[in-house]
Image (cartoon, rainbow, N blue to C red; front, side):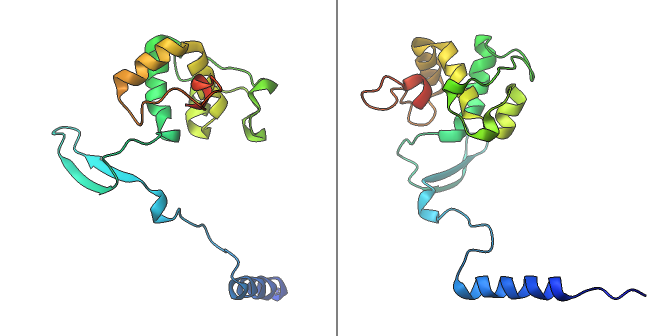
Length: 157
């Protein structure tokens, strides 16, 4: 029977312990609780509040959670046709992270959270239609103005 070389295992354990002793993060870190602004869970059928925690009486930017309403907007407006149409090619002016420099369809967009695809949907909607949809959804802070003074509401709201 062949004997396993234990040196790599021992070396890994020593490195782990050393990292732990020196205070290096060695596991996944969750977001600090103070960053969670509001958690609200409602019963879809009755509208009853099942759980409420945090500052839920103020509106905040919906950030990445807006991809779900944006997908509905995209399909309703005809910009998106099905789970793979359209498939848009990456363009350098999108200035995206390397992982997002690829052709993206609605499925990849939702799965990989590709920001430039979201921005392209809002560009194609235009200011007026985008603002109208956001107003109807009444979701998040409903602010579509973007960065003050930059007229980038379609891409930075």
